[in-house]
Image (tube, each protein chain N blue to C red):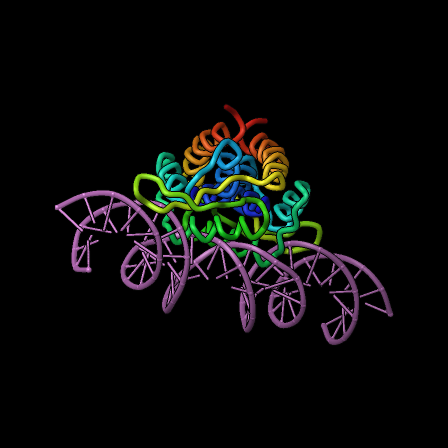
Length: 99
Length: 99
DNA sequence: CGTATCATATCGAGCACCGATATCGACTTC
DNA sequence: GAAGTCGATATCGGTGCTCGATATGATACG
């Protein structure tokens, strides 16, 4: 039940970080674990690729600490979506939290 | 993408309203439409029953405006979950919105 | 080389969502 | 009181997402 909330937020979380700098799949898994959730690789990697296909992210290969990593960054389309989504989140939050 | 956020919130939204008074499936569909989303009956009704099975909601039959309706109300377990979920939402929101 | 390591990718199973359709009960009309 | 209408609720097959285990692939090290 609570988990579904997180899964819903996941894409926004990705966009948020990807709009501030380049991110990797492993980083996002770490980041989500910080919030107390285990998101499996089978969830995060397909998500990133879907988001790239949607034109929300763009990626390039790099090597870091001897490992080949794919770095994702938000596209302008992704940032626009993030803004619209934030608006929606504020609305939903104020409904459930505020009042 | 944005839709998934709403779907994640849906359960909380239900709990929120169901903790303030009795709700029906039709009411929740209306309520979600207010936020600009169409959630189909095939989504909301199974959700309500799952939540009842989980012990988050309890229901009774009634008749309103000549129609037989099932009225749901949050259980104490449901309200506890709502509180914990709100905490989580605040955390996720401040991460994505604030900063 | 050969191997260890770790990020990324894939796979089968299970479950949630969709929207179209069915069911079901209460009111209305005759 | 039987038939018809209306709207809320329930169900169903198809599709897509998530899981976690496993595979792939590139790099560094000995």
